Length: 353
Length: 275
Image (cartoon, rainbow over all chains, first blue to last red; front, top):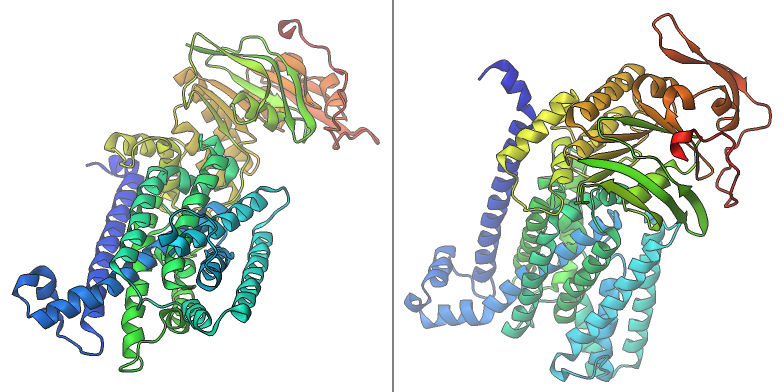
């Protein structure tokens, strides 16, 4: 190859190397996630060696009855719930940040989680169903309807002229306060039993995970991801600004609305099952962005893996910090995650927004 | 083969009519048209309407060609981006909209070729946020060219470039127009550059086309006075090039606050070709 050719291909050579590196990062994150998942299964009131856990995972028939029951029936739903909820919240945050061009956007910061929480509490306290059908799923459906309503408010507000990134954040703060006040009102009016349920729920906890909840959350993620993946180029183009994206032929308004609706589903369902876990939706995407940039072909899976990994690791921590007790995971994500996140921001050399 | 004829094009921005009744003769491939006029005259809105990005009245006649996704490409004015994307990724993004997630080797080669032609291969790995205004504009040009448009609408593509780069880019675009036989419309403020690099000019004032024709006919003393509110004239130098000699702005006549929504009478005679 002559020097001339080398110069000619410099761009694509660099691009290919970068893509390969990102692919390797995704693989490494996948590996770390599996490890964290296995550790999550291994830790608890009784700790098991990691090798036993992995052996039980790969070949349940060969494991002892006790190990099989603890790993597969008791801990598995909780560990899987951590993965799916983390993935859902992080993906929701990633796409909110993308479509609102706002680094502070997440289901939690813009009030979608609070709205979902209020919807769920309505069901917990008064048994009010916002959609009378499907009474078995009254909590998630209530949460979704409230979350979707809030997402639509944010969406249409963000389309008004003169609305800036900062105004959206202010609107989000106002929504958070409103729904928290409404939630407090519900708590004030609630019976003692319902109050305990609501309070426990506002802290965010995985321990009440069931296979059904895992299945529904996983289904939401599995439905959402291909829809986003199909729009990967268009969503990435949004980050170049509306004018540029439109000039590329992207239907910006339609894409935003569709994305916001999927986001509200992704944000609401986990909240309705495990309560408010605030940190993942904001931070998961930021870490993903630092690692692989914003090409959605890498950014989307990285956000999924990041969210799942953070919540899985937090689940482990919540069991280790006070031996014998399982702390509410929503509390741990903030207490441990925030300092970790700041250290990342300050040590990261590249600009991450 | 694609040709372009605008027929009674109009569009609104909110409630304000920003473009009204723009009709041109057939614009042939291989030509570069300067779209000139003061700030807020409606040049960008006209481009968006022609590209199908804004609703409005009138038709865009492409001759025998049928409009496909990238037949008409609009390059908007530069706005910065905070996206964590490299230059190369941002160009791929432009090329791949609406197609598969996999980037093929021939697509990479195409992008390499365009970056080389614009002499920005060395920027390929840089993040968009690290670029200067001029570099961003060159990247935007690459993002437009990579889509292989038949009609290219460029909104002030040289506004942030130094003089050397301005001339280089305009000469490059002229070359692209001739070589690839495409129609290029460039919104441009520098009338000397329009005279030097463009085949014809279309003058826009208050949303209306007030002149159309060869640059040498459109860009004259009357245009400077009526469209730009400046006193000056056009001279021919020893190389045979036309250039503008300016004396200064006309007192109290600046029409910066155009687009009042009220239609204005054409202040420059329309050349016969456009009527």
